[in-house]
Image 1 (tube, helix red, strand yellow):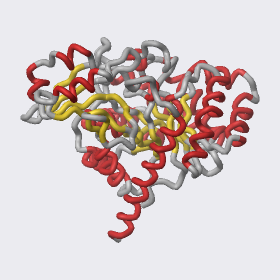
Image 2 (image 1 turned 180 degrees about the horizontal axis):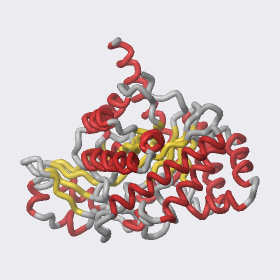
Image 3 (image 1 turned 90 degrees about the vertical axis):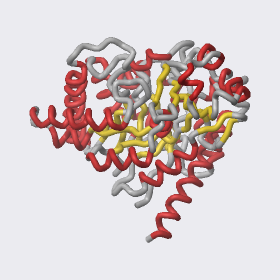
Image 4 (image 1 turned 45 degrees about the vertical axis):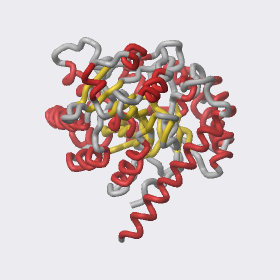
Length: 396
Protein backbone atom coordinates (compact mmCIF):
# COMPACT_ATOMS: atom_id res chain seq x y z
CA UNK A 1 0.00 0.00 0.00
CA UNK A 2 1.00 3.64 -0.02
CA UNK A 3 3.67 4.45 2.53
CA UNK A 4 1.65 7.38 3.85
CA UNK A 5 -1.45 9.40 3.04
CA UNK A 6 -0.18 12.28 5.18
CA UNK A 7 2.38 15.02 4.54
CA UNK A 8 5.92 14.07 5.45
CA UNK A 9 7.11 15.57 8.72
CA UNK A 10 10.40 16.42 10.36
CA UNK A 11 10.92 16.48 14.11
CA UNK A 12 11.30 19.94 15.62
CA UNK A 13 13.45 18.63 18.47
CA UNK A 14 16.30 19.93 16.29
CA UNK A 15 15.27 23.42 17.45
CA UNK A 16 15.34 24.74 21.03
CA UNK A 17 11.87 24.79 22.57
CA UNK A 18 11.80 25.70 26.23
CA UNK A 19 8.69 27.89 25.98
CA UNK A 20 5.75 28.35 23.63
CA UNK A 21 7.38 31.53 22.34
CA UNK A 22 10.60 29.66 21.58
CA UNK A 23 8.71 26.86 19.80
CA UNK A 24 6.85 29.40 17.68
CA UNK A 25 10.06 31.27 16.93
CA UNK A 26 11.56 28.01 15.64
CA UNK A 27 8.53 27.45 13.43
CA UNK A 28 8.93 30.92 11.94
CA UNK A 29 12.71 30.85 11.60
CA UNK A 30 13.05 27.30 10.31
CA UNK A 31 9.89 25.26 9.69
CA UNK A 32 8.11 27.74 7.43
CA UNK A 33 11.26 28.23 5.28
CA UNK A 34 11.71 24.44 5.23
CA UNK A 35 8.15 24.07 3.90
CA UNK A 36 8.88 26.61 1.19
CA UNK A 37 12.18 24.92 0.30
CA UNK A 38 10.52 21.50 0.29
CA UNK A 39 7.83 22.91 -2.02
CA UNK A 40 5.21 20.46 -0.78
CA UNK A 41 2.82 20.11 2.14
CA UNK A 42 4.75 19.68 5.38
CA UNK A 43 3.72 18.51 8.82
CA UNK A 44 5.51 19.74 11.91
CA UNK A 45 6.58 16.78 14.03
CA UNK A 46 6.43 18.79 17.20
CA UNK A 47 8.58 18.27 20.26
CA UNK A 48 6.72 19.89 23.15
CA UNK A 49 8.76 19.66 26.35
CA UNK A 50 6.99 19.48 29.72
CA UNK A 51 7.27 23.25 30.41
CA UNK A 52 5.80 23.99 26.97
CA UNK A 53 2.85 21.64 27.50
CA UNK A 54 2.22 23.15 30.92
CA UNK A 55 2.22 26.62 29.39
CA UNK A 56 -0.18 25.61 26.61
CA UNK A 57 -2.60 24.05 29.10
CA UNK A 58 -2.42 26.91 31.60
CA UNK A 59 -4.92 28.91 29.53
CA UNK A 60 -8.30 27.53 28.36
CA UNK A 61 -7.55 28.81 24.86
CA UNK A 62 -3.82 28.09 24.86
CA UNK A 63 -3.89 25.05 22.60
CA UNK A 64 -6.54 26.48 20.30
CA UNK A 65 -4.44 29.62 19.82
CA UNK A 66 -1.36 27.53 19.09
CA UNK A 67 -3.36 25.44 16.59
CA UNK A 68 -4.48 28.59 14.77
CA UNK A 69 -0.86 29.65 14.61
CA UNK A 70 0.11 26.35 12.97
CA UNK A 71 -2.64 26.68 10.41
CA UNK A 72 -1.66 30.29 9.72
CA UNK A 73 1.86 29.09 8.93
CA UNK A 74 0.55 26.51 6.48
CA UNK A 75 1.52 23.60 8.74
CA UNK A 76 -0.30 20.56 10.08
CA UNK A 77 0.65 18.23 12.94
CA UNK A 78 -0.16 14.57 13.38
CA UNK A 79 2.69 13.39 15.58
CA UNK A 80 4.55 14.54 18.68
CA UNK A 81 7.91 13.54 20.08
CA UNK A 82 7.40 13.15 23.84
CA UNK A 83 10.68 11.30 24.42
CA UNK A 84 12.71 14.29 25.75
CA UNK A 85 10.85 15.48 28.87
CA UNK A 86 12.98 18.54 29.66
CA UNK A 87 15.55 20.75 27.96
CA UNK A 88 16.89 18.81 24.97
CA UNK A 89 19.29 21.64 24.13
CA UNK A 90 21.09 22.04 27.43
CA UNK A 91 24.89 21.84 27.54
CA UNK A 92 24.73 18.20 28.63
CA UNK A 93 21.75 15.95 27.86
CA UNK A 94 23.36 12.48 27.55
CA UNK A 95 21.60 9.83 29.70
CA UNK A 96 19.31 12.44 31.32
CA UNK A 97 17.05 12.18 28.28
CA UNK A 98 15.81 8.84 29.65
CA UNK A 99 14.34 10.47 32.76
CA UNK A 100 11.68 10.24 34.05
CA UNK A 101 11.20 6.61 33.02
CA UNK A 102 8.00 4.68 32.41
CA UNK A 103 7.65 3.50 36.01
CA UNK A 104 7.06 7.08 37.22
CA UNK A 105 3.80 9.03 37.45
CA UNK A 106 5.56 12.02 35.91
CA UNK A 107 6.11 10.19 32.60
CA UNK A 108 2.49 9.02 32.49
CA UNK A 109 1.09 12.47 33.30
CA UNK A 110 3.28 14.22 30.72
CA UNK A 111 2.31 11.73 28.02
CA UNK A 112 -1.38 12.19 28.82
CA UNK A 113 -0.94 15.96 28.58
CA UNK A 114 0.77 15.61 25.19
CA UNK A 115 -2.06 13.40 23.94
CA UNK A 116 -4.62 15.99 24.96
CA UNK A 117 -2.74 18.71 23.13
CA UNK A 118 -2.29 16.58 20.02
CA UNK A 119 -6.00 15.73 19.94
CA UNK A 120 -6.70 19.45 19.49
CA UNK A 121 -4.01 19.88 16.84
CA UNK A 122 -4.97 16.93 14.63
CA UNK A 123 -6.60 17.58 11.28
CA UNK A 124 -10.08 16.12 10.94
CA UNK A 125 -10.12 12.39 10.29
CA UNK A 126 -6.44 11.89 11.10
CA UNK A 127 -5.04 9.66 13.83
CA UNK A 128 -2.19 10.92 15.98
CA UNK A 129 0.97 9.33 17.31
CA UNK A 130 3.35 10.14 20.15
CA UNK A 131 6.84 8.67 20.36
CA UNK A 132 8.22 7.94 23.81
CA UNK A 133 11.28 6.48 25.48
CA UNK A 134 12.02 2.71 25.57
CA UNK A 135 10.95 2.36 29.23
CA UNK A 136 14.30 3.43 30.67
CA UNK A 137 18.08 3.28 30.35
CA UNK A 138 20.05 0.10 31.01
CA UNK A 139 22.85 2.11 32.58
CA UNK A 140 20.64 3.10 35.53
CA UNK A 141 19.87 0.83 38.47
CA UNK A 142 16.37 -0.62 38.27
CA UNK A 143 14.34 -2.66 40.76
CA UNK A 144 13.52 -6.28 39.98
CA UNK A 145 9.93 -5.41 39.08
CA UNK A 146 10.90 -2.63 36.64
CA UNK A 147 9.39 -4.26 33.53
CA UNK A 148 6.11 -5.00 35.29
CA UNK A 149 5.94 -1.45 36.67
CA UNK A 150 6.63 0.00 33.22
CA UNK A 151 3.96 -2.25 31.73
CA UNK A 152 1.49 -1.01 34.34
CA UNK A 153 2.29 2.57 33.35
CA UNK A 154 1.68 1.81 29.68
CA UNK A 155 -1.58 0.00 30.44
CA UNK A 156 -2.80 3.06 32.30
CA UNK A 157 -1.65 5.24 29.40
CA UNK A 158 -3.72 3.11 27.02
CA UNK A 159 -6.76 3.52 29.26
CA UNK A 160 -6.35 7.28 29.25
CA UNK A 161 -5.86 7.37 25.48
CA UNK A 162 -9.05 5.33 25.07
CA UNK A 163 -10.88 7.79 27.33
CA UNK A 164 -9.51 10.68 25.27
CA UNK A 165 -10.83 9.04 22.11
CA UNK A 166 -14.24 8.53 23.70
CA UNK A 167 -14.39 12.22 24.68
CA UNK A 168 -12.99 13.78 21.53
CA UNK A 169 -13.33 11.23 18.75
CA UNK A 170 -9.58 11.56 18.17
CA UNK A 171 -7.41 8.45 18.33
CA UNK A 172 -3.84 8.98 19.55
CA UNK A 173 -1.45 6.03 19.57
CA UNK A 174 1.68 5.79 21.71
CA UNK A 175 4.91 4.66 20.02
CA UNK A 176 7.62 3.19 22.28
CA UNK A 177 11.00 3.79 20.65
CA UNK A 178 13.74 1.15 21.13
CA UNK A 179 17.20 2.67 21.37
CA UNK A 180 20.74 1.33 21.89
CA UNK A 181 21.61 0.51 25.50
CA UNK A 182 18.05 1.15 26.69
CA UNK A 183 15.74 -1.32 28.42
CA UNK A 184 14.15 -1.95 25.02
CA UNK A 185 17.11 -2.01 22.69
CA UNK A 186 16.85 -4.77 20.14
CA UNK A 187 13.83 -5.82 18.15
CA UNK A 188 13.83 -9.12 20.04
CA UNK A 189 13.65 -7.29 23.37
CA UNK A 190 10.77 -5.17 22.07
CA UNK A 191 8.79 -8.22 20.91
CA UNK A 192 9.37 -10.02 24.20
CA UNK A 193 8.24 -6.99 26.19
CA UNK A 194 5.08 -6.53 24.14
CA UNK A 195 4.18 -10.16 24.77
CA UNK A 196 4.62 -9.48 28.49
CA UNK A 197 2.63 -6.24 28.20
CA UNK A 198 -0.29 -7.96 26.48
CA UNK A 199 -0.36 -10.70 29.10
CA UNK A 200 -0.46 -8.11 31.88
CA UNK A 201 -3.13 -6.15 30.02
CA UNK A 202 -5.24 -9.30 29.55
CA UNK A 203 -5.17 -9.93 33.29
CA UNK A 204 -6.29 -6.32 33.79
CA UNK A 205 -9.08 -6.61 31.21
CA UNK A 206 -7.36 -4.07 28.97
CA UNK A 207 -5.67 -6.08 26.21
CA UNK A 208 -7.78 -4.67 23.36
CA UNK A 209 -7.15 -1.03 24.24
CA UNK A 210 -3.44 -1.71 24.79
CA UNK A 211 -3.12 -3.39 21.40
CA UNK A 212 -5.01 -0.47 19.84
CA UNK A 213 -3.15 2.37 21.50
CA UNK A 214 0.38 1.10 22.25
CA UNK A 215 2.93 0.18 19.59
CA UNK A 216 6.47 1.07 18.57
CA UNK A 217 8.34 3.92 16.95
CA UNK A 218 10.85 2.22 14.66
CA UNK A 219 13.91 4.45 14.44
CA UNK A 220 15.95 3.19 11.49
CA UNK A 221 19.20 4.66 12.88
CA UNK A 222 18.77 2.89 16.21
CA UNK A 223 18.22 -0.57 14.78
CA UNK A 224 20.95 -0.11 12.18
CA UNK A 225 23.39 0.76 14.99
CA UNK A 226 22.45 -2.63 16.48
CA UNK A 227 23.57 -4.20 13.17
CA UNK A 228 20.06 -5.56 12.68
CA UNK A 229 18.67 -6.33 9.25
CA UNK A 230 16.09 -3.56 9.51
CA UNK A 231 13.68 -5.11 6.99
CA UNK A 232 13.74 -8.40 8.91
CA UNK A 233 13.15 -6.45 12.13
CA UNK A 234 10.06 -4.77 10.70
CA UNK A 235 8.73 -8.07 9.42
CA UNK A 236 9.37 -9.68 12.82
CA UNK A 237 7.45 -6.93 14.61
CA UNK A 238 4.56 -7.31 12.18
CA UNK A 239 4.53 -11.10 12.53
CA UNK A 240 4.44 -10.76 16.32
CA UNK A 241 1.48 -8.37 16.11
CA UNK A 242 3.39 -5.29 17.31
CA UNK A 243 2.08 -2.26 15.47
CA UNK A 244 4.47 0.33 14.05
CA UNK A 245 2.76 3.57 14.97
CA UNK A 246 5.63 5.73 13.77
CA UNK A 247 8.86 5.42 11.78
CA UNK A 248 11.81 7.72 12.36
CA UNK A 249 13.68 8.20 9.11
CA UNK A 250 17.24 8.56 10.35
CA UNK A 251 20.84 7.57 9.58
CA UNK A 252 23.83 6.65 11.73
CA UNK A 253 27.56 7.00 11.23
CA UNK A 254 29.59 3.99 10.11
CA UNK A 255 33.36 3.50 10.29
CA UNK A 256 34.60 0.70 8.06
CA UNK A 257 37.84 -1.24 8.62
CA UNK A 258 38.83 0.62 11.81
CA UNK A 259 42.22 -1.10 12.16
CA UNK A 260 43.49 0.17 8.82
CA UNK A 261 41.38 3.30 8.48
CA UNK A 262 43.36 5.99 10.32
CA UNK A 263 41.70 8.69 8.23
CA UNK A 264 38.24 7.42 9.17
CA UNK A 265 39.10 7.21 12.86
CA UNK A 266 40.46 10.76 12.77
CA UNK A 267 37.24 11.93 11.14
CA UNK A 268 35.16 10.07 13.72
CA UNK A 269 37.02 11.81 16.55
CA UNK A 270 35.49 15.08 15.37
CA UNK A 271 32.04 13.73 16.26
CA UNK A 272 32.88 13.41 19.96
CA UNK A 273 30.77 16.08 21.64
CA UNK A 274 29.37 16.76 25.14
CA UNK A 275 25.62 17.15 24.61
CA UNK A 276 24.10 13.88 23.37
CA UNK A 277 24.80 10.21 24.05
CA UNK A 278 26.39 8.45 21.08
CA UNK A 279 26.25 4.74 21.80
CA UNK A 280 28.89 3.00 19.69
CA UNK A 281 28.81 -0.60 18.54
CA UNK A 282 31.08 -2.94 16.66
CA UNK A 283 30.22 -6.26 15.10
CA UNK A 284 32.91 -8.84 15.63
CA UNK A 285 33.93 -11.14 12.76
CA UNK A 286 31.87 -13.88 14.42
CA UNK A 287 28.72 -11.72 14.42
CA UNK A 288 28.71 -10.70 18.09
CA UNK A 289 27.75 -7.05 18.68
CA UNK A 290 30.05 -5.27 21.15
CA UNK A 291 28.72 -2.15 22.86
CA UNK A 292 30.26 1.00 24.35
CA UNK A 293 28.05 3.55 26.08
CA UNK A 294 29.39 6.68 24.40
CA UNK A 295 31.71 7.75 21.63
CA UNK A 296 34.90 9.14 23.16
CA UNK A 297 38.33 10.29 22.13
CA UNK A 298 39.81 7.36 24.05
CA UNK A 299 37.70 4.87 22.10
CA UNK A 300 38.77 6.35 18.78
CA UNK A 301 42.48 6.84 19.61
CA UNK A 302 43.03 3.62 21.54
CA UNK A 303 40.25 1.14 20.77
CA UNK A 304 39.93 -2.14 22.68
CA UNK A 305 41.25 -5.09 20.71
CA UNK A 306 37.80 -6.44 19.87
CA UNK A 307 36.69 -3.05 18.53
CA UNK A 308 39.87 -2.70 16.51
CA UNK A 309 39.41 -6.13 14.94
CA UNK A 310 35.77 -5.51 13.97
CA UNK A 311 34.97 -4.99 10.28
CA UNK A 312 32.85 -1.93 11.12
CA UNK A 313 31.61 0.36 13.88
CA UNK A 314 28.26 2.10 13.96
CA UNK A 315 27.57 5.17 16.07
CA UNK A 316 24.25 6.52 17.34
CA UNK A 317 24.84 9.94 15.89
CA UNK A 318 21.95 11.05 13.69
CA UNK A 319 23.43 12.45 10.49
CA UNK A 320 21.62 14.04 7.52
CA UNK A 321 19.56 11.37 5.82
CA UNK A 322 20.55 12.47 2.32
CA UNK A 323 24.24 11.72 3.01
CA UNK A 324 25.69 8.48 1.62
CA UNK A 325 29.10 9.43 3.02
CA UNK A 326 30.62 12.10 5.22
CA UNK A 327 34.20 12.27 4.02
CA UNK A 328 35.93 8.98 4.92
CA UNK A 329 32.94 7.85 6.98
CA UNK A 330 29.99 5.91 5.65
CA UNK A 331 26.39 6.24 6.81
CA UNK A 332 23.59 3.72 7.20
CA UNK A 333 21.49 5.38 4.48
CA UNK A 334 21.15 2.07 2.57
CA UNK A 335 19.12 0.79 5.54
CA UNK A 336 16.49 3.47 4.90
CA UNK A 337 15.47 1.96 1.58
CA UNK A 338 15.35 -1.52 3.13
CA UNK A 339 13.25 -0.31 6.07
CA UNK A 340 10.81 1.75 4.03
CA UNK A 341 10.38 -1.03 1.49
CA UNK A 342 9.38 -3.32 4.36
CA UNK A 343 7.02 -0.68 5.77
CA UNK A 344 5.38 -0.43 2.34
CA UNK A 345 4.34 -4.08 2.69
CA UNK A 346 2.31 -3.41 5.85
CA UNK A 347 -1.47 -3.18 5.53
CA UNK A 348 -1.48 0.22 7.23
CA UNK A 349 0.67 3.37 7.00
CA UNK A 350 2.72 4.42 10.06
CA UNK A 351 3.51 8.08 10.49
CA UNK A 352 6.82 8.94 8.80
CA UNK A 353 9.12 11.54 10.32
CA UNK A 354 12.66 12.63 9.47
CA UNK A 355 14.53 12.97 12.75
CA UNK A 356 18.00 14.48 12.52
CA UNK A 357 18.26 16.40 15.79
CA UNK A 358 22.04 16.76 15.82
CA UNK A 359 22.61 19.55 13.28
CA UNK A 360 23.86 21.91 16.01
CA UNK A 361 26.55 19.47 17.16
CA UNK A 362 27.81 18.26 13.79
CA UNK A 363 31.57 18.87 13.36
CA UNK A 364 32.43 22.40 12.36
CA UNK A 365 30.42 25.51 13.03
CA UNK A 366 27.06 23.85 12.36
CA UNK A 367 24.97 24.23 9.20
CA UNK A 368 25.33 27.48 7.29
CA UNK A 369 21.62 27.25 6.45
CA UNK A 370 19.71 24.81 8.63
CA UNK A 371 16.42 25.31 6.79
CA UNK A 372 18.10 24.45 3.49
CA UNK A 373 19.69 21.35 5.02
CA UNK A 374 16.37 20.13 6.41
CA UNK A 375 14.67 20.77 3.07
CA UNK A 376 17.35 18.69 1.32
CA UNK A 377 16.68 15.82 3.74
CA UNK A 378 12.96 15.98 3.06
CA UNK A 379 13.42 16.13 -0.71
CA UNK A 380 15.76 13.15 -0.63
CA UNK A 381 13.28 11.26 1.52
CA UNK A 382 10.42 12.08 -0.84
CA UNK A 383 12.47 10.77 -3.77
CA UNK A 384 13.22 7.59 -1.85
CA UNK A 385 9.57 7.10 -0.91
CA UNK A 386 8.46 7.68 -4.50
CA UNK A 387 10.98 5.19 -5.84
CA UNK A 388 9.80 2.55 -3.38
CA UNK A 389 6.12 3.21 -4.11
CA UNK A 390 6.69 3.08 -7.86
CA UNK A 391 8.68 -0.15 -7.56
CA UNK A 392 5.91 -1.65 -5.43
CA UNK A 393 3.30 -0.68 -8.05
CA UNK A 394 5.39 -2.14 -10.90
CA UNK A 395 5.52 -5.52 -9.15
CA UNK A 396 1.73 -5.81 -9.01
